Length: 62
Ligand SMILES: [Zn+2]
Ligand SMILES: [Zn+2]
Image 1 (cartoon, rainbow, N blue to C red):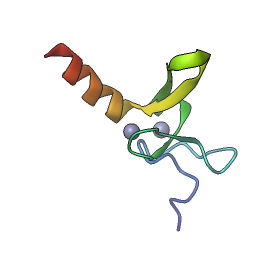
Image 2: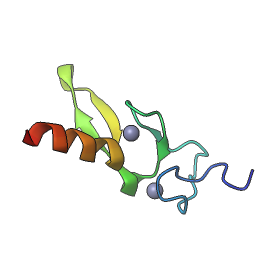
Image 3: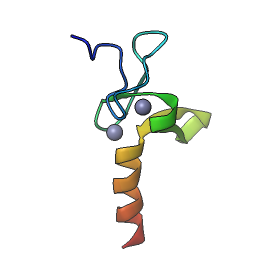
């Protein structure tokens, strides 16, 4: 499809590698602007998209 290789969040950015970053939670593929690294144990990182980050921020505020 035409959307192949596009960011699942903004659907505008085309991935240079054809894959992008996969969100650890919802498994959508997002560009660097639509997600960010989140540190976990042992100095490792997971990728979290902006949508899931917003959800988590809401949970933290309660
Ligand atoms: Zn994007
Ligand atoms: Zn996500």
